[in-house]
Length: 145
Image 1 (cartoon, helix red, strand yellow):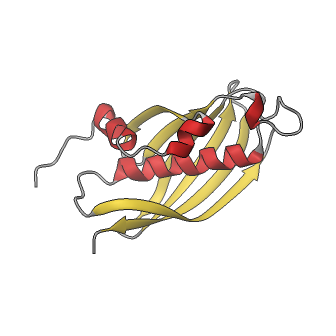
Image 2: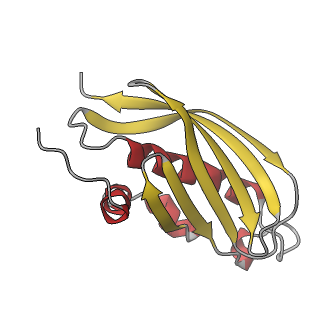
């Protein structure tokens, strides 16, 4: 098998080649994927994503952003593995630290991975850089039988 170099462009293309329609519904965007196992995603704040206070981003939207960023980091880490099919969230934990009233930016890194599992950590910050939430997501990495 010929290996494809893992340039930022190739890594981003890998993630964008596996679209998730729900990301589009929420408005989640890929900001940067510059190395295997690392991804930065963005969620613009808009009133439909708010809480009872329309200017505060709903915790469910933040949790989804955490899951999306972690999943993108997993995709960016699999390389040219022809057996890779996808991944499924096994566990997600979110700690909310501050309200977000601007865009949310999630940075995900893989802490550890094997052929079957991926463990990720995600930090979510607002536009000013204030830490608003942290999450850990565990994935089942699905491969051909």
